[in-house]
Length: 65
Image 1 (cartoon, helix red, strand yellow):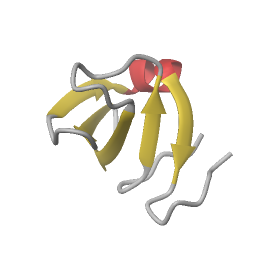
Image 2 (image 1 turned 90 degrees about the vertical axis):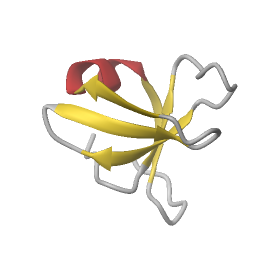
Image 3 (image 1 turned 180 degrees about the vertical axis):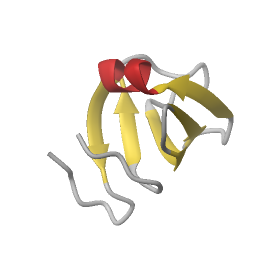
């Protein structure tokens, strides 16, 4: 998959606030993600994000393959 800044990624496990969707703020060896529910930011390894991704859509709402 092609990950880009601004995309929304749906992960396997929910954040404690209940949201499963995260906005991508930084792409590289590590990703910086911001929870769309509460705004909490985390850094995750690329391999972990790729493994736990369940869906990906662009910032304008268009689903990515």
